[in-house]
Every structure is written in C-alpha cells, then in structure tokens.
Image 1: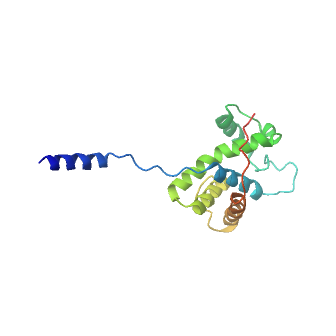
Image 2 (image 1 turned 30 degrees about the vertical axis):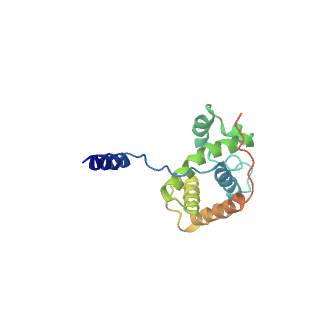
Image 3 (image 1 turned 60 degrees about the vertical axis):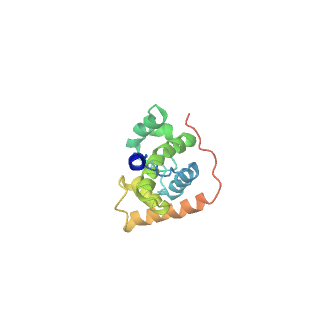
Length: 158
C-alpha cells in the first residue's frame, strides 16, 4: 500500500513538471539575421526613396519601434543619421520575431525564412513565390554567410 501511494505521488509530481522551454535564439543568430536584412535591403538607387537607414525601413513604423526599443520616439531623419541606433532598433524588433519563428518551427532555416517574410510583408507566411520568395532566399543566403563569421557586440542605441 505504501509503495502504491509513493508511486502515485511520484506520478503526480511528474505531471506537474514545468514544460521544457524552447531554446532561445542566440545573439550571434540575431546579429547574423540583422546583417542579412541589411545586405538584402532593396537598393533603389534613389537618394530620397522614402525608406530610411541601411535596412530601408518605412517611415511610419519608426516612431513606434524606436519608442518600444529605446524609450523615445525618433523621426525617420534621426534614424537615418545614426546607423548604430538603426542597427540597435532593428536588432530589438527582429529578435522577438526570430525567437517566435524559431519557437514555432524548431528549425533555424524555416525560422529565418519566415522572419524575413515577416520583415518584408508584416506576415510570416505567404512568401513562397515571386519577389517575396526571392527576397527571403536572399536573406537566408546572407544569414548563412553572416552566421559563419564571428559577430561584433550588438550596439546600444543612444
């Protein structure tokens, strides 16, 4: 009887064990992804193309992203003139999406592709053909190159 109670207690404790946490993306993975997005950013050839920083960010999202990541709203022009701040904000924003995609897929290639799709379209799915597919493949290629190199420390925004 005592063994039965002890066995029941052990089994009950086993049911209450916390779930295994999904692996966190590393700083190296995030840095490689941020660099891949920079390298894959569209090159319009126009000085005033309406996109800002080396990552070609649309101006409407800059105030919200900068507020979320630095605690203060920046104008597109402020972001444009500070590559260190731009990189830090892109790192801050993309870390969460890359982590979400990795947690959902448990596959680095799929996570990078889906996060690149999200970066371009605002949705992690639907980049299976056309220009969006070409873009995500370009990001993935740059990511693989960047992740094979040691990454510099992530800069902090000013």
